[in-house]
Length: 331
Image 1 (tube, rainbow, N blue to C red):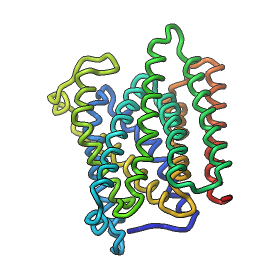
Image 2: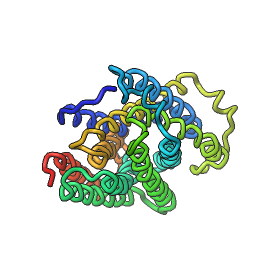
Image 3: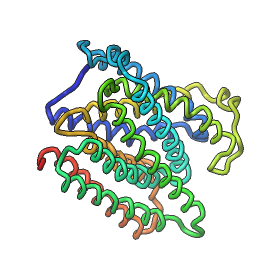
C-alpha cells in the first residue's frame, strides 16, 4: 500500500483531508430544496464506492502483506466489528450534522459539532496512541474549545427574536459532536493490534457500517424530519433530478478521500492519530469560511456577531497551529 513517511508529505495529506472534510457539505448547497435524508442515500453510496476505488488502487500499491487484499483476508472478527461500529457512529453523527446545517448553516453547525468532536476525539486518540507533544496538543485543543464558544455566541447574536430555532440547531450540533468524537477513536481501535485493519481496508469496512446503519436511521429521519418538514418516502427519492443524485455521490466521495488521507497520515510513527485527527478537523475552519465568505450566512448579522466570528477564526488558527507543531517537539 502507499504510505508516505516524510513529514511535509504527511502534513499535506492532513491539510487536504481538512479541506475535504470542510468542503463536502457544499454539495448540499448545490441541491436546493432537496431534503437532506434523500441527499444522504447518494452520499453513503459515494462513500462506499470511493473507499473501494482507493483500497483497490493506492491500497494495493506495490502489494505486500499490508496491501488491501492481503490485509482484509487476515483480519479477525473483533477488528471488523470495531470498523462497522465506527461507521455506524459516524452515520448517526453525520445525519445530525446535516440536519444542523439545514437549520443553522455551515458556519454554525461545523464549528460547534465538528469542534466538539475534535476535542473528544483528540483526547481519546491520544490515550489510544500517545504521540506528539502533549503540551502543544492540549493547548491546541483548549483553543479549539474556546473557538466553539465564540462561534455559538456569534450565532446567538445573529439570531434575532425568539431563540427556539437557534437552540435546536446548536443542540443538534452538540449531539453530532459527541457521536463524531467517538467514531474516529473506534476507527483507530480497529487498526491496532494483531490481525487489525489497515488504513485503506478500515475505510471500506467503515463505509459498509455507515450504509447498514443508514438503512434504518436515515429512513427514520425521512419519516420524522427534524427540520419540521413533511414526511418523505423512497418514491420522493426516485423522483429526484438525476444530477442531484450525482452531486450526493460526489459529496460522499470527497469526504471519503479526505478520510483515507487522514488515516494514512495517522499511521506515520511521529504523527499518530491524535495529531492527524485534530488537524483534519480544522475542517471547521474551512466550512465556516465557506459559510461566511461564499454563502454569506452572516451577511446581515450585527457587528457584535461578526466580532465573535473573528475571535472564532483566530482561536481555531492558533489551536491548529499548536497541534501541527506537536509532532516536531516530542517529549
